[in-house]
Amino acid sequence: MSIQFKPAVRGNEPLIIGLAGGTGAGKTKTACRLATGMSGGKRFALIDTEAGRALHYADEHQFDHGDLCAPFRPEAYEDAIKAAEAAKYPVVVVDSFSHEWAGEGGILDWQEEELDRMAGTDWQKREACKQASWIKPKMAHKQMVGKLLQLRCHIIICMRAEEKSELVKDEKGKWHMEPKRTLIGLNGWIPICDKRFPFELTASFLLTADEPGIPHPIKLEGHHRAFFPLDRQIDETAGQRLAEWAAGGKPAPTVSATALVKSYEACGPGDGDTLAELEAQARAAWSTFTGEQTKALNAARAAAKRRISESASG
Image (cartoon, rainbow, N blue to C red; front, side, top):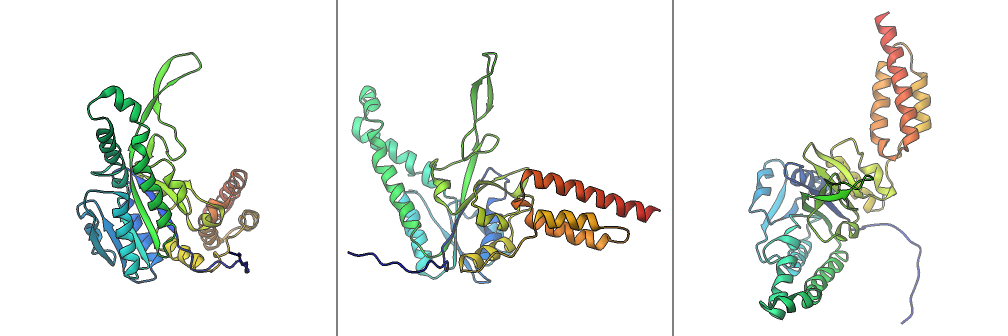
């Protein structure tokens, strides 16, 4: 079999976005806002494992709802998402995907079932069979992820997160509890899923209850940063721009830090409206700036505000 090459063109690329968080972090609401923007005004599908909780948002967003019940095997998720794709929904929301890992009949339960089958109540044998008991569940999970990556609809995956701590020895040799540190966590909040899963997605974020809907990136590549300002809630506009990019469009150009600094420095008496416009431009591009650029922008903005305020009071 020979391979053929052709010019690379981005168009109709399916996206898989992950949103993880604890209670009150805004996972379902954020997923609905993002899906509304990505669907281009069409109804999207929502696969619900949370006993109908997503229906709380039925008056705010246009979607079709389906319950997914236990056992939460990987193939159950795969079948449900495939059914939504076959029904031509442009976007599929899954809330919550954490049941695939820790729900009734999920990966953890399946591993325990395998261990019971292999070793019963023989605790010495159970210890010897522990690694082997993971083979079938993890293989099923891996196959399911591979199938999801081949689907052509956009998918938004919600995951629960839990707060975890760990014992850490300090420089004086004393042990104390600290929030658990992982590559997929933030301040001890860790998504309930396979530890590699968030990195399989196009982009993934942790949401927190103190700032609902504000994205804290787990995985965010450079060409997607413009769609997710880190100081604002993920909203319908983010979904719309993301879908346009996936369809082959180019991200709306963002102003450079250098140009913004120069514009702030040019602000003088009576430029209050200009300052407001610059603030909007800065917010839209903020996530693309480096630490040094951010410092320069903050200094230039503060100086501009001071000049405008002094001229107004004088």
